[in-house]
Image (cartoon, rainbow, N blue to C red; front, side):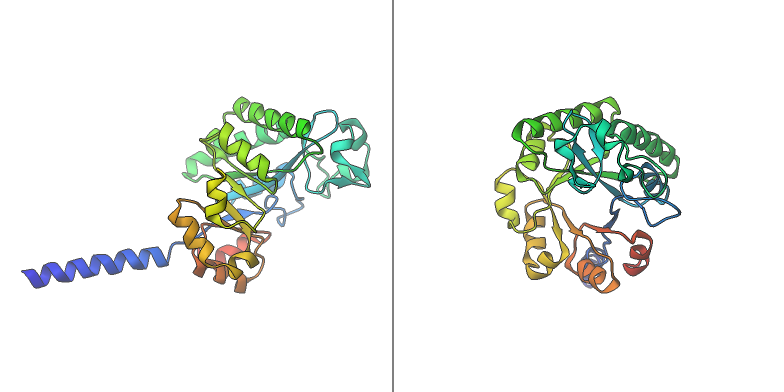
Length: 266
């Protein structure tokens, strides 16, 4: 009887360890699933494609214009115009405001309205795509507070609190968002701060470039011990994907989400 009990205890421990080793990271489509059809980075269609394919996350960039509008665009400059120094009406006249898909650069309000509908359409499949919401640094502290206010208002309007994951290279924004919306996960993108130091500043998660995680593999386990999630960006090849898988990261951000599923065995 004792031998049988010991056998089942060992089997349970082995099974638990095996499950931990084979846990797969969530796949985050970088700037949406833009490598699908005729889509474009940071477009509504790219987000819709990511949700339709049930990736664990879809990432997008939000920034402020000089007149207080919030738009989705990655670069701080649009055709030599600094976005936070330029009114929306002027930006709308630029060629780059029309994306390669034919869509216009979306406002945050239009984008989140589309997100809300896409997530509702996803519910019957019993899947859930998180919205990885990168907040870009504006030009001044006043603009920073205005941008944060706009974001919080828009998320409340579309009731997306449970669907958002904030990320930013701006450490002050990360600290503020963690305080203002403690029910929404926040991660720092800056890559150079050890997890325990970041945790002490009040930022609950890390979202680091894959090379820094390879240089500091202990940061993954250190973060997990503190209850922090770890995302690796931006991984676009199989070799690096497998390295991140072996490190035990929680998410992998990629421009190749369909290939990533194959690479990590999902």
